[in-house]
Amino acid sequence: MAGLPESLTIGEVAARSGVATSALRFYEEEGLISSERTGGNQRRYPRAVLRRVAVIRAAQRIGVSLREIRTALDGLPSGRTPNKAEWAKLSRGWRDQLQERIEALERLKESLTGCIGCGCLSLRTCKLFNREDEMASRVDGSSLMGRPAARDPSSG
Image 1 (tube, rainbow, N blue to C red):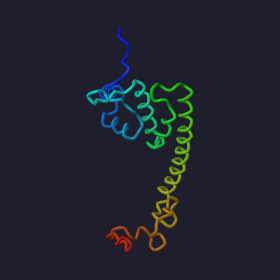
Image 2 (cartoon, rainbow, N blue to C red; image 1 turned 120 degrees about the horizontal axis):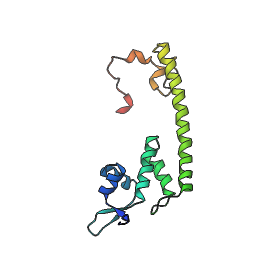
Image 3 (cartoon, helix red, strand yellow; image 1 turned 45 degrees about the vertical axis):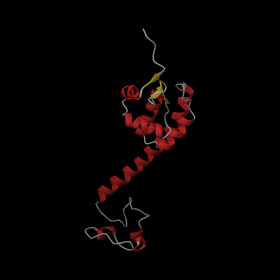
């Protein structure tokens, strides 16, 4: 039985990872994965890239930004599959982020439930009120509905 190949083509990585070749090229442009080029300028990826792609996809599913993923992956070896301790360290940080997101979503869910239940449609008393809304101090948001957008005098 033949051994596993040391390197994979972009098509092989795409087929084995379930990620489109365009996404793999994008990941490479963003510094998340790397390849070497053959004499014919074709990409060849080390087998370990499959594990990195799996981590990228998992991190994206929980809402980790590509910048955060790149920072985390920069601390991992690119030429080999990270060991158990390296993966554990990586996942601890993301687990904390995920917990924070879960807690924020729970708070939002409670606010939204109250908002749906009250039916007030008041931007002045709503728990979900946008405090950065510049128009809030001048007019109730519902009074703007159905009117053409006001021209911003600072825009020229």
